[in-house]
Image 1 (cartoon, helix red, strand yellow):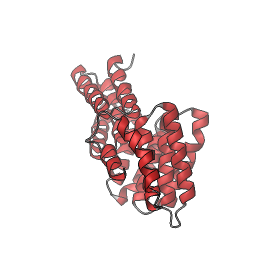
Image 2 (cartoon, rainbow, N blue to C red):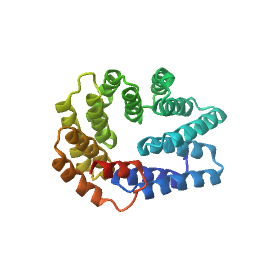
Image 3 (cartoon, one colour):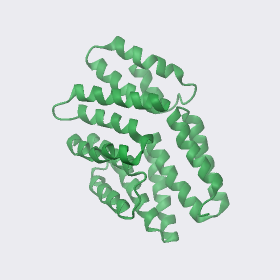
Image 4 (tube, helix red, strand yellow):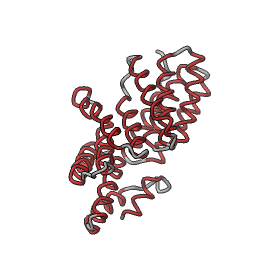
Length: 254
């Protein structure tokens, strides 16, 4: 087999725990995977763990960690002579730079995602496109970001990438609110869809994020009681992760 089973299991566990709403345990599993892979001294296993660590950092919203892990993966990819890992790492690196406010990273990020696609690797393409879409929104270019979501949202039914579906709907809601003429009704529909998908999957973290977006919208519409009723039970479910940005933000909304 190409890579170590235990390292792979810890990787998958970290992503699963995060989506289910256990961010502290998820972070521990991700770090354990990296520490274990480094002890193995098996380069391909380490490359795979770093690749999934980038995916985890993206979902955890830790762009500093994403940048560091992407650069480490690029170095390792060069040593392995792997064009696949190099293209994937470059896409993550430029997405991280874009999310950290480097507007000059937007075009390189699109180019890197295209290069990643050209290697035949599309498993995490929706995640990368959603990161770039958010970066366009943060740069004040929501219309361009919105166009990037059309493909990943359209392919979910075909490729069954349901793990990212709730997040895609949430990002769409944010983009609709950031348009020159905000689409409040469309945004609310997107947030509600994200919440519905997350609940079906028992994905409490994705549910919380979408609920925060919807509650903020309701706050602006003077629907504060509805916002509190939405957030309170979701926030009350959590037993860990109170130092994460997601839980801190939800307190402010509540």
